[in-house]
Length: 499
Ligand SMILES: *Cc1c(COP(=O)(O)O)cnc(C)c1O
Image (cartoon, rainbow, N blue to C red; front, top):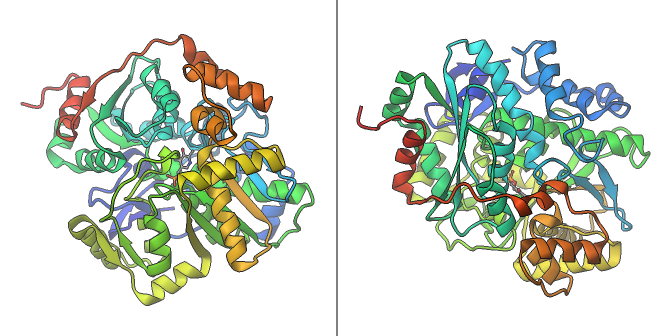
């Protein structure tokens, strides 16, 4: 299978190259030249399989230049034993019938682990294919959870370095603590003055800067990305939507062919896009419900067809969704406008220069046929956490609460009773202060006392890696302006920018 750029159909690369490059040199994102499919029979068969087997079924359709042995070695290293739940991504059905797809049983307690536990292995194999002896330099901009998951995935990976940038005041205490205490000889972490969009735009710029790339090549290094712009990050996320459907089949909660709704708390649009790809491959889905916090750029987009980032940016209690430029929308547009690279290029250029673009009427109609956008503020988020805890005895984090709140709004709006899978994207223990307040307990003391408080009221165990942070010393305290990010990267690589 070949991959092309959303901004230039003439670009053709292998899966290996797409994963190594991260982003196309024209600034576009790599997409499969055509989407593979799973038949009804193949989907039904997933029901009797382990997560690793399900991953193999899906990944081999996309990573066609990986041998079965290579793929298996990646899957084996990533999933079995690395997650606190043997099933990796279990589905828990609430008393009211909502199916929670729990994606936070990995080492960093957020859904990013599902992709970032395997991406380093996909890169290792890709680098071996390229056989050019270059070191990989992974650059990451994070709204909180990607950073830690990437650091944990890539720490001490051979021939690989990783630098993570997070918005100085835009992540939770626990998220920051997870990152600045990261162990490993090949890692560095830096706070950026600005918000996530500042960091993401700067990282994209460093990637596509021809001079910087040439400088790196001279030192036998190449950039790659662990953000969801990287195809190797998205493709493992497709797996768990099939896995959830297979679990519901196995539990007899649906029969093959029944449609489901999918609700995803959304920021950069990677997770929900993976669900959309699953749908295009044959997963029976009725509606994708895209849940945003107060940064409601996507809600407005799905309602009006105008993507407009010219608006105030808010810090919310769901920081991993505090984003105004959702990169992966570009891939959705590419699919919806008939894979027309010139149109996508034009819209993305308008976004860059004017901060907005408006899609055509036919594209808007296609969009609203399958997507529903909704938004929820911090107060509603807290209220939802409390309701879930009181009614269902279910403890959810702030991001998952945004999803549950918007799902309720959707049901009120439409009366749709289709079985529904909600992506539960983080452990409540990553946001202890917000969750405690929501359930009516005054947070006391430091982060770790709050973890204990939450465990006492909920009776649920604290994830071991979060508990272990208590004794770890901060290693990374640098704070930089956007303009200093590139020099920081070069310096951390021991490369002088003057050459
Ligand atoms: C990253 C993240 C999101 C948003 O996911 P996208 O793929 O960026 O849309 C939602 N919830 C949590 C907990 C996250 O870490």
